[in-house]
Length: 508
Image (cartoon, rainbow, N blue to C red; front, top):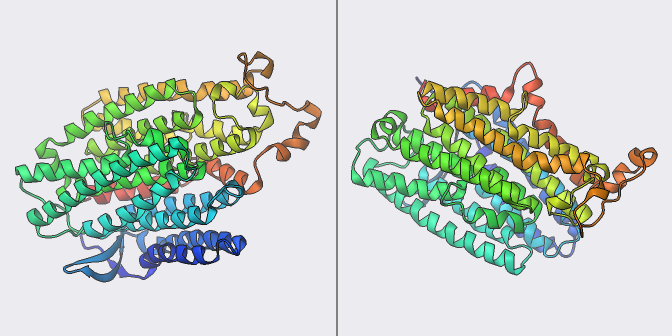
């Protein structure tokens, strides 16, 4: 099958614009905070607009390419946008824009805002470049541009806990980078190319090929939160500012999953991967990741730590989908990248609003919180039900496709595992919702702070005064709507793109 190739400057603009604006932010940040904030919002909005402009080119299966030339001969920077790249890019750009808007209000009284926004945009550049990489070298380069600035977001508060979590993240990132570099060199040695437009770069099941696969799993699995490489994640998410947590969980984890998808289906190819039996290793890792992440989440009382461990469990779904090696499982896998990105971004932004407005982060203190912040807790509830797998929301669709993929692969026990995980999801999300809406403040545990519940006649009149500022509330509401809106439409646009991407990866 011949694929049409279209040359465009859009991929370069989407990566270079947020890479260059941080210098401007540092120049004007302290003298003109309004201009700084405007530059951040315009930059993230421009990236979203550029991403949307790619759709007419890729919707019929064409590939958009862009080359920036050589950096270190013979290695250069090349972008290649197919339907899979476009899907993750448009989702990521939309969420990043909403988080940018949220940050303007959330960070208003925080220290070092200029530093935060500069590294915020550098991380955006790295994520966009990684998703659109046309070869492994470009992927490696932008993977680093994303990962290192994210360290500054993690340690932003500069508390002892933040610095310790940041140090763990930094060491894990460096270790993952070294593993990636080994895989990069070994792939070139075995296949003679690093281009991701090829399918089956490595075709010989040699010891070096196996070590190359292990190196890639270590590099991308660490970023994706795969057990046992997840140890940085549960510490980094709770200490980072909530908008940064939303991006770490909603977007950055997906770069690891995306990298593994490209390695399995482009570097090795599905048939070679099936013949080697390496998929069984990833299947085992995905099962452990799902169960461990969900089980530990149940034990956490800090809201952001609970959400962090939930992210680990949910990334296990994505690892499972790519390891089953069936087209139906891939549809669920790619759709769950979208579903989890929207849900977890919404949940972390809700957590940020709750912490900002009430100072509470221990879920045992949430009794009656739904009366004080009904919009925020309503959005939290919708997102929680989505990730639990309640129809017709996005989480149900991805779990349905993944379960059918497990049966298609002849592994029905993994469908049972998904059902067990849904039950565990309910066990750690529903108590938060029940406490917020159905437990009265006078039944709180001894010693906790009371929640101010307004009288019924003044409830609606006081909603906006008790909720987070509009710049924080609007992104939360839009993300909550995104949890269910597409599944209620006559044509589920994200599901259709997931099906197209799955067929492409399977070579159909």
